[in-house]
Image (tube, rainbow, N blue to C red; front, side):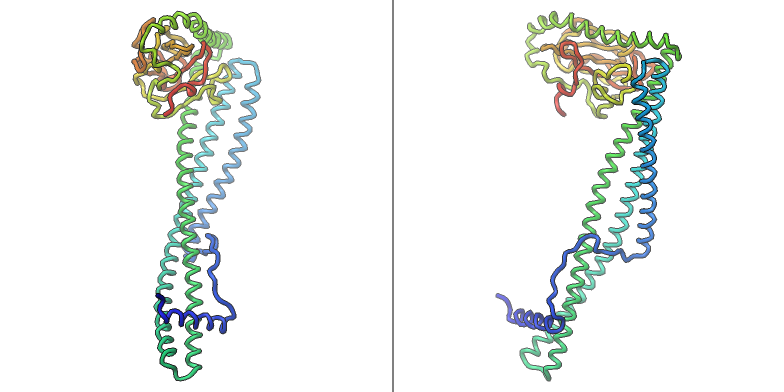
Length: 417
């Protein structure tokens, strides 16, 4: 049940407000931009940071213009005949472009850090203002309670004059207006604080994404620089040696395709008599734990030697000496050492599927050996200068899936993680 005093005072305030001001206050819509930062020191810091952000964004635009020029050069070189000089120039342009990509990411990360600092400064200032607004509200409520009690007594027991009563009503109406303004201000400050906090969370997520992107770019740069080193070491800038090297690499891929076609039927017959093959090979297990993700995808556009041939599998960065496991039951078609793959193992499974594991530092199986899903085939390698590294610039496992001898995307077969 509502106390009669509440009806009475509410009615009095309504009349007094209408009489004295000609309208009744209503809560307005508040947006984050309604709040003005009052702390002069905070404003100076924010203005300085915003100026730095603007300069960094301008630098990013200029860097992106240069990156576009390198893209055009790379596209032009890719259309030219494959020679040692063209390939080296192509790698030089790729390296220069990747270095600029890293610079752009660095600038964007720096600008994001500044934007986060702006938000932190704003939040601190707004939080202080909100604290002061709450104090003002508490003071106004206490003042209003005094007027409320005085008016109730005057209305119930009479007052010396109507003029005194009306004066008290005007004072109460003024406090009510101040209260409304204080409430609006506090609400706007709350909205601004919550908006800034949400923006800060979003920018921290963007920053984490950029850090991951930078790591990928740094790995790509290392790969491109390493690829150039390999090419120079293998060819000594000689066109004849380059063409011979290229012929060997392409011949190695052709050999793999031909051997799978020759062995597939024979291996399928052997597999049909092995009970454990019943688990099938349509879904493959990961040959290593991809803790560091995938550094190169199937037919990856960033593959340094893409101008010479497509990347026929995926690369999984793992420490040197990581056990490499069979993705499904099958027979070892062969173990071999080549210029491109280094030490590698080919396993033929049922349903026309074959898997290839390359750049191994050690091979633990032999030709015509049956392996179960998860059997150890060898140890990973890929570090330049180490046994079995082949055409590799860093520690990783190169993994291929072939369907009837043709390279296909391993991600279409590997179990989802």
